[in-house]
Length: 382
Image 1 (cartoon, rainbow, N blue to C red):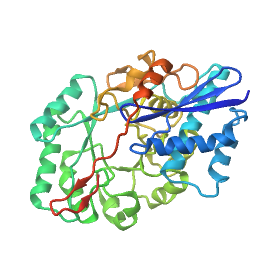
Image 2: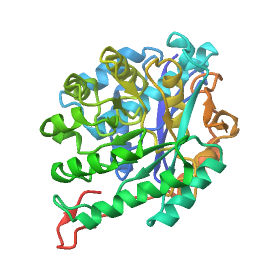
Image 3: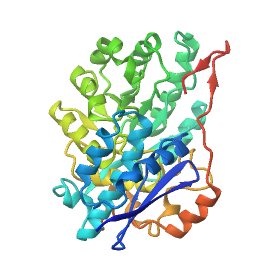
């Protein structure tokens, strides 16, 4: 079997899909998504295809090593996202070739289902409370919310109070039996992060995500190590080498690699295994499309230290299209009592609606991150 063609599809709302074809009619799908840089990653996939066309798609590990090492310059979000989508598609092909799921090929599942959480939005306490209650009504037992909008390096006590009020509104709406995580999104600098960690502690959060950007972790280690709330990060780390110092620090309790950014199924599994050696939990990052989620679930199936899965159904980014639009059968993503059953079909376990993908790719998208500014005019972290 030989790879004959790689085709990318830039589809709404902000996703990039990849189809890998072979001379024996077996095709695989991946999602080399990088939000706001889809066209850039598509160009990287096209460059990497020069090596892959004509190769046996089943030699996944060898291809991963060549794509990562043979270009001399390596790592970073663009290259690793391109490799990620290719890697996912090759695993999809291999599973379909053998007539079994990716999880079975990787040693078999350690679980049959995994807990999922949903995003909630809202700008004011009443809106947040309503969104939190709505998530519980839809059957979710865990949710995540943005902690704040822009925040200066040193901000006001009024801003801190507003942040705490928003989170407290969610907690009051759902009670103590529902888990809430708060995403700082790397928007917070060290002086304010220490304040917010302290002020949010009484609300008994499941975790606080990206209290500071990963590259600032070293200067914030004492505060993170002292925090009673679990600390999570990792969506902007792209390889096992990026995660190495984070895990060794002992200050992070949950890592969040993204299998569409961090080198695909192959590399994310290695990252998760490293984390297990440090007794660190895994909650894969996935505010993306159905192929990315399918890849996450195959990893969740055979990753002992995975405990919950992010998913994007109905989130505010999904304007025009949503998670289920691009697959022929929604069954693999049927959530029940806060869990989803791991898909057991061949490959990634989903069937992509190729005709609809082609139709929406003709419209495409040019999604870009918003640009935020502080009151003084300086650019703010988004």
